[in-house]
Length: 298
Image (cartoon, rainbow, N blue to C red; front, side, top):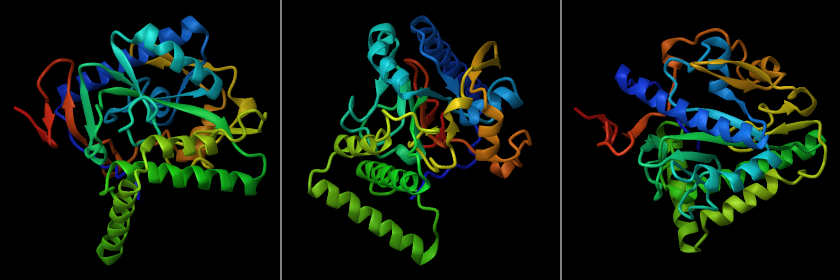
């Protein structure tokens, strides 16, 4: 089971508006973090965009930031008071129907539903993805066990929300895997297993070493937490770099991190590998959808 990313064309003006909206969310988020002394930095494709394009990767359609766990927890408490007029947070703790382990800061009055999340029974909006960084176990064996446990609960969490995840298998293997996923989904429904229950188990695994000053931190949301680890002592001091018409922070060891995750990240990939989130529904604030059921609207 995996999210399938592929290149989905946008009309240029639509992608431009989407990135402008995401940039506004990022700026508002950064302003609150600055006000309350909460360090954050951009990661993944957003970090590549910052160093390679001084802004968004030209085809990218999401924005990713990371925070240390203690700062993330403070932000969750501050955000509803500071940002509640324009934004709402989304986690399984907030919405019992949200079956994903990535925290969203969502712009009210908008919609962004990716192809792989179209079965979720919750409100999905244009958003900023926020990843808390947790301590990775101090030994290789324990780290593998921690990552595996978090991965299992993360996958079950997503299956709890949809019986039909994207599976990167073809033929009989793909059919069999799809049948197993559907069976697991309906079994969880039968036994009333909730996304919130699974999310709490996921978080328990991710936060197992929260009170230990481990060498590495990582995000357990998404794939490959062992590959995406950061040396704790190399993150700070953060570095500030241009991003579109503003500036964002990167970890001090950003080059080491991006190289470990992506290899030669300064090389622009061929068109067939320029992937995005495959929008199924896209709606700007209080407007009619511009993409509906995967089709661009006239």
